Length: 270
Image (tube, rainbow, N blue to C red; front, side):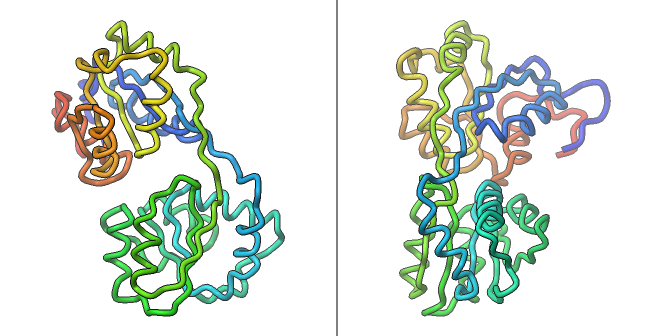
């Protein structure tokens, strides 16, 4: 997303960013480049699992898998870090690697790995569609994921006759340290837009706000979601969704804000 000229499309907008602490900076910087004011409200912390036995077993047996499917950048990072700690390399792995989304693929390529499949639709269902012609019953698939990951992907892979191994490579925990301050800003009407980048950010936001905030405070706040699954979660929690990204990336989310939430697109190339 390139901004030309002095006018910026998010000028005058204060946007709450509800990402994991480790991921907030990128989105904050992009909002500020577009003229908006970003308020970082990191809701999630990523931590290694306390019990790594299943993960370690999968790592040592990596050559036995036909596919390894990564669904997030975080999954790549924690998996590669644990491989290093265990002292196992990828030399014996002859299977294929799939990634949900270009950023996950880029993270894998950064580690020197070739990604065989990247779906055009950056969710589990899109990955299944892209993989369908390449999957064979009986193949072994490893899914290194978060402990709260959706079950749609492993269930469908199993239905197709594949042997699926899910391993937790990181745990997601609520980080509500700044909830009182965030609630005060909402109560005072200082937030124009809230961005949700995953279903878990929605549920953790609602949990963090429960002691302080009321849904009435959100009536004048616009909600933008990174994709339809996140939007559905927001609606199930009683939130009105005003914009949904058509491309399920940070860039797509910002484009949706500019397109749908009153941001002036003059001077932008999205």
